[in-house]
Length: 305
Image (cartoon, rainbow, N blue to C red):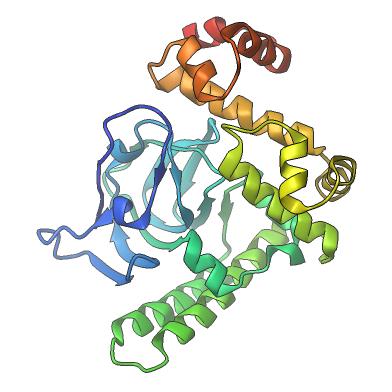
């Protein structure tokens, strides 16, 4: 199976499952199983790094298990290296760019669409600190026991996808995926032992806020907009986001806008004026002041780096 190079433009965009994969019949060693446009599972995957030559996002969640070799790239413009025995959890909030891979790189991949994730009912509000850690550290090293357990769960998932005549196929796949994700959470929990699992209304607001921010950050920077979508006041939104995540809602908004701006400046080929328009700034001057306030340098200085 190969990742397929599709988009010619350099501006960061979003790939769906149908964009990401196609089956190359000439690669007899590759196995690939699909549930419509909602779920795709691939064995012995080899990547076409050109697909993510420029930063893009995926419309959903991708789990990548490295069996041998390595893959290098950036996640939210930070350098990362996926190696044997590691798992990567990548999702819509990650801006992805692949740089290189070893000749012997092989991985198994599970990709779920955003719509299918909602049907699977993976409740990240149960472990917000883990969710935060996964956002900042998308790659983690598994021990031998964890690797074996996840491999067995992956095999069970693959078997159900093969069983096309199974009456309860979709329901079984959904339950297996739920177990799969919670097991991965436990792998991450080993790296963050001080995490206290907690669920409440505030945590639910945080997850909803992050989903809205991922969708609208290029057009909306007003805390009032996000508060209105959640049917709460801006003051309450600010306080609960700060309490749950350690950052205020305004800080999260600025973080996403600046990340998008950096990607556009570095890779899009757009002028600074066009980028200001793309990010819904009224003028190039306003965008320049905003960018310098948060980064310490002007857009032109960053673009020239």
